[in-house]
Image (cartoon, rainbow, N blue to C red; front, side, top):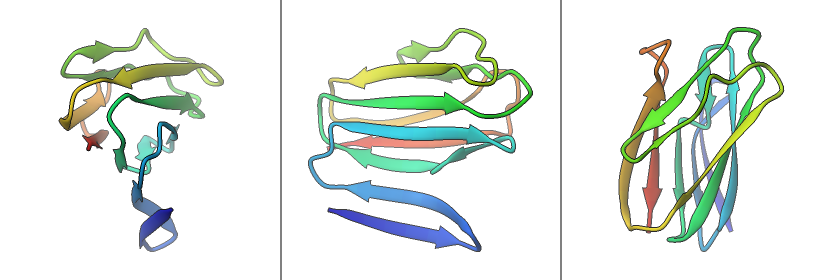
Length: 99
């Protein structure tokens, strides 16, 4: 079951119930969606679609420098809120909520 929260044409928040695997897109210097809710033990996959390079960094995880077409995954074992950003472009921010 999925609830979408939209601003203009972009999904800004995606809430899932009992989802274990979620895709997050890096595109146009943004994370889409910027906020997701997943089940404990779930994995988020960031898919890099931008022509510029990005590094996803948060509490307890950091990707290598991602070029267009590359992915990064992290499994969230603990319940909590995980803010993250691009290490190269600090204005790019997102949030993972693990329930």
